[in-house]
Length: 207
Image (cartoon, rainbow, N blue to C red):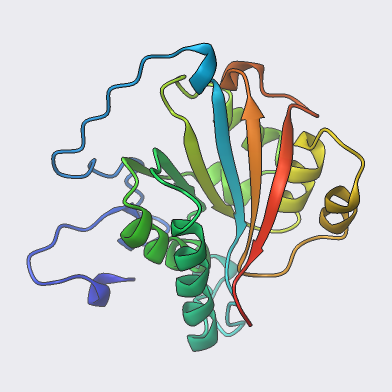
């Protein structure tokens, strides 16, 4: 639970819920209104796949494993790094696992996403099922951050990447905790398929 991170009187978001009591959609930011005219110029989208930060092993269940104190620091550093790269975040998709929700918390605070969704499919399924969360997205959604787990994060990134290069080689061996893979997607979400994106950067929290 992250209730201790909130100020008095603040309403909880899905990132605060226990795994068995999930609200799928968080309220949009107060006064957040975005007008977007879809043209060929703004069809390029950004997808950021994040592996959760360093987690403890002593928990009743895998779903409840929290971040370590070091993991919380790395999560904040990663959020800080992403905030310098992402101007406006439309959607934050998060696994229901405690370690993923705690990793996403500083991203929610720094990037101020229009929408936050906790998606059980990210925890329970592999890369192809996670891809199915992305393809129905509306075209007005231009920037998405997804916080999940290995090996799904690296498998999905490698599957979507359109070039056999050094970045592909790095991702093929998996990614460490507190790492974000930034992909550029050209075209609509409905057309997103294997080799339909390009990894532009691998962002790791300063160790």
